[in-house]
Length: 295
Image (tube, rainbow, N blue to C red):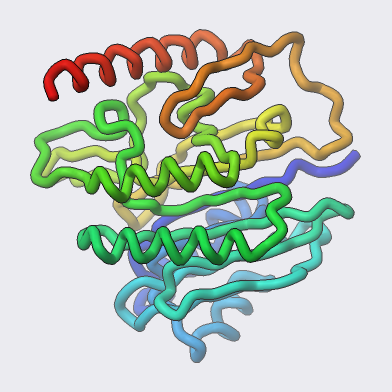
């Protein structure tokens, strides 16, 4: 039987200067989560660290370096399944990695993202570049994961006193990207209007969902699990995604067709996710209606 295709993502807030933290992080993914493709953001890696980190991980690591104290993304490749890297696209700022990989004769495009956190101009330039680079590939089974630094749903993805507002223009660009490449915010789809977050500030008592899995709509029938897990030594949580192999016929007893909403378009939804999704759609409609009346 073909294995699940597992992916994990975590903003680690720097691994370069703390070997103990780095080794604990690698061990956590290798032992507790049983490998898979691990997307890391804010690695603070450099070319000089590549061999050491690969040795500590015990397998292949792909990098896009930022500086030694900022940015940087990496993908830890699995040690327990066979795969073939077809191509790797990196940016020069340590903001994304685009990996074309074949797993058991099926091609996937894995995209690890660490978006700018503050300046709107930088955010727009980043997402414009990312969309252009993805468009250069033959989009097949597309899986985008990472820290997008946006509350896709302004009320459900944030809790606490607001110190600053999201960039509406950046949010619109994200939603346009999802529409262009036929992607869905899979955690929100399966969890409706649930409040659960991936970043927290205990001192400011602020909680946000900034980390996302956006996957091709045609992969939704193959979702086995999508979840959020606590992490060590960082203010972000781990997000996980498991996809069933294409030859797995267990698709659930029935499906329902949903209408358009931010990050969730018309698609087939397993009935296990239906109640939460319906509540989410209704709450979103009410939110958008009230917002329109105010403005």
